[in-house]
Length: 140
Image (cartoon, rainbow, N blue to C red; front, top):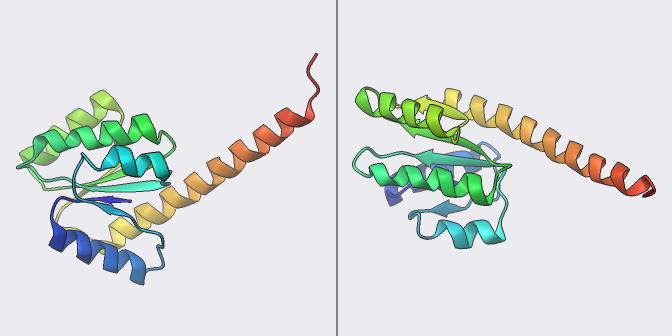
């Protein structure tokens, strides 16, 4: 899932993700759309293209963590005071897993996404196996 209020950068990121083999990418432009989208989808990774002119958009990360706690959040952030503020907010809320500084290096982004997806798939498999084993143990 991609959260980006700018249609142009959103389209570029979605195209680049698709070219690199990341499929089923859902883009959302507004935090108002998130609850509906998250009610129907459980993303493994959410990319959040943060814009300093929209500081309230950090609430999107909180919404994702509440509705899809299994999702890892990657924030793409401008350097300087914006980066410092997002890091501080992230430390307080524990809502962002990885922060990538702009200008965006595709290699850094895709390495982080690949690593997070591997962890996410492993955790999902572990949860499935744990549920299966729990069902095999008779109740006392």
